[in-house]
Length: 170
Image (tube, rainbow, N blue to C red; front, side):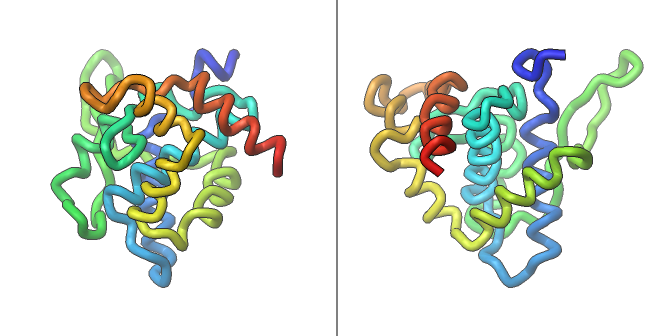
């Protein structure tokens, strides 16, 4: 099975993993929607940068406050700037019928997600958003080339290239 063709999880499952992890560790900045979007982005970006292919199949788009997976915004935007207190839902097809699911990833990616959490948990959503706006970051490259009208997709190839350089430098 090719990892690039069959991502191991979904963006919502990764988001829910970070939420459940954050709720077990109350002495870190709360996970609001901005922080959640960036945690999911960084998990995907480092996964790509390490040559593992995409972590999930959903597109990451360039929005004014940084990279966002649209499905996550649709699910969590009503929380505003407050802490997210519930898991996200996702429509899934099982046995030919659509059902609402609250996916939480459990399995061999947990140590990897834990590393991402340990790296970024101390930062606020604003701080994480600001870090995605630095020169040379995929969001900045797309913003400078295409602008933010229409919230263009940040290509996985670009994310992989930028984060591969970071992996090699570390």
